[in-house]
Each structure stands twice: as structure tokens, then as C-alpha cells.
Length: 212
Image 1: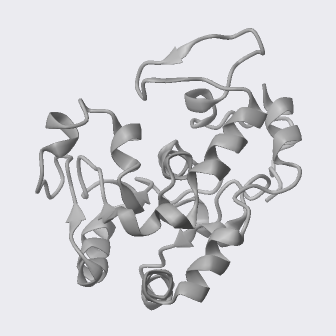
Image 2: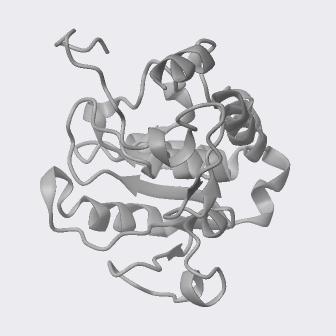
Image 3: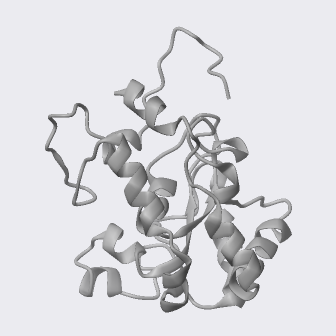
């Protein structure tokens, strides 16, 4: 969507997690433990991570959070756990609903390496605000997870991301996202079609370069 104030330049929180500030930047993101990349490499890594042939080898789903009681997303993670747990175990290595320590004991707290183990990632923003997009959805895309996303008023970086490559969770009508997950898990043709969709829009690289 268009920025309502043309005098304000958006500086998305997620951008500095993954994208180099300049072509010469060799900085490592200490929080994620990964090297920041040029936009074309970032796009390529995300696209290459999403390959259907690896899907069946992965665990079902993870949700990594420290709480579910703040912001406009309060209690929605709990709702998501309830509706999606019928498909399989949802691993929660964070403080919220903790049921495993494998993020810490097997992956040395590396969220990036951990997410590579899963088919889906429930990644909700803490607040549902237009233009507010953090690193959460991009962590999923970067690691080959299908994001089950809530936030940004039902759109997510619409200029660069193909919205049909994200499962949007609507707490008023969760059946839509439930059916999407079910089709991907159980219908091989639907899964193949989903993975054939590009993650990024054609002008994504140009837009990312111009944001630096």
C-alpha cells in the first residue's frame, strides 16, 4: 500500500537483519548469526530454500515466542496453537507454551538453523499495525518455512512479497488458514502449485536496492 505521508521514508525493522547497508558491508547480524546480503543474494537464498522435495523430511510446525499477552495480537498465538495442533505437534522452544529445549540444546539458540527443520512457522507480530513488519515473516521465508502470519493489517510488504506465498491468519475466520494448511499437507497437487509460486514480486530486487 502507498505510504500516506510522502515525506516519511519507511525503514522496515527486518531490512537491517538481512540486507547489507552497502555493497561493501561485510557485517554479521549478531542476533541471527548470519551474514547480511546483497538484495539479489537474499532473494535467491529465500527462493532456493523453498523446494517441495524437502517438505516431507521436515517436522510440522514451530512457534517461537516469549509471550501471548501484549499488543493487538494478545491471545492469538494461543488460538493458533489450538487450531493447528490437530495437524501435528507444534514445537514451542520459547518461553511461551514451552514444550521443548531443542533450540537451545541442539541448535545453540540459532533460530535460523532451527527453522530449517520445519514445514510451517507460526510467526505473529505483537501488534497489528499497517506498515509494521518485523523480521518474523522473513525468518520463515529465509529458512524454507511456510509462514502462518498475523500482522500488518492483513498484508505483508506488499511491494516486494507475493501475498499468495504467505498463509495469513484471520482470528475471526481461522478456517481459511486451516484449509490452506490442510491442502498443503494432504493434497500433493495443491502443494506443488503452492511451491511453484514465486516468493518475491518481479520488482523486489530493485525496490530493495533503492531502500539501502
